[in-house]
Length: 494
Image (cartoon, rainbow, N blue to C red; front, side, top):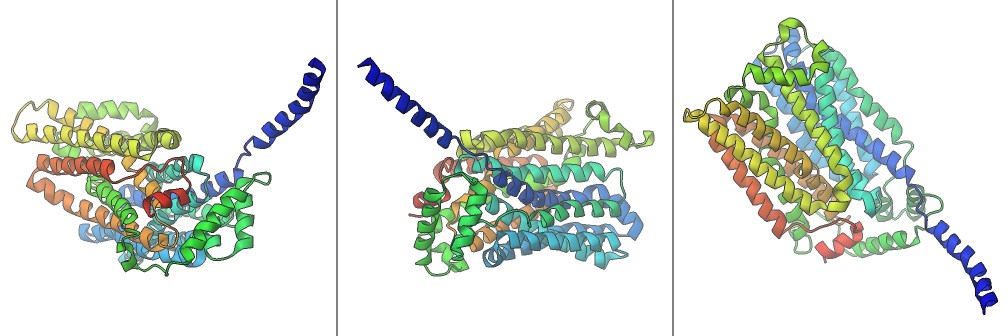
């Protein structure tokens, strides 16, 4: 008996080892490379968004712009982004995700060159509009592309890189803009666009888009490249093909189709998250942080503490520039870098903690941050505890920005990239992105009017909206971690 058992052990051991060797997952390096190329577009997005703040004074002086002319220049970015949001979905469906990213990069390149060579207002505005278009298109196609190529086990973490690179682009643009001219800063904005254009020649197209277009051979080649030569793609390929075949039986989606019963839940989830992300006050607070600090009586001593923390950046400024304006700008820089760090730390836990818990924690923090800031301004208006006012304001804004970065910044884009079936993804994703950019414009436009009406009332309104976001997430938003895109559709759009 012992000899028989020994013999069977000798037979089994190689089989077990072979199975273990075959089951060892292969590193999907092409997924990482493809994600890197895609998020170069996210970095370009951030560069566009962060350009106007450090360049404002120099552009106005060099081109003799009035406040109204520069305000128009700044606002055109949002209008361009709205146009990009409307058109990026159909473009991504027509010529592919890679094609849409090429178009986005081309618009950004044309825009930056127009700004660099601008001698007057017209070229400057056209350049800003073009970069805005590219930015709006990137905001849709990058998370969609990443979600469609990534394995389900770490799709959330990779999609979160979109938000990390946006924040990084803003931060880098802000910092570099303090040491170079506005024209040179425009040339620097070309770098991520060039990397994106060149990188797109080295990566595969989205397999799901290829399957949808009936390009079966290319679909299998692309999926094989993404998963690795030795990976077994048969099950995933079959699941994608079965889902595509089901969708092909449905009529081609139009904008009005989004309100059909079969799609209404995914539309409600995506649009709702975009509304709460923007109308919770993020763009008003970020765009006018320096104004908030000034109104709260931001003290020089506190400013110098922040200045000391950022002493490594002191070489950017002359001794006669250590006034309140530059202290406030440094404070904003600290907030932006804080946002980058928190978003980056958040990325690895997206696929472990899940989307829904991060949204709830984030929205709760937003409510707390708004209430702390509201208390600060309430005390100021009623001439109470004046020494505590600026401290509470800074703490409130820091809590708000940190909380936004922990979930509400990235998760709506992650969920949006997952929640729509592929046959309406172009139309629905474009509309959701448009809703987001409209909210960004509306909040940034109304913020100063609200602050003139009531400083503490403004933050109470934002606190209420963020509290409603908590209710919305609990009641409506499903958990999507650990599921394939096809499994998500089976739950959301049965």
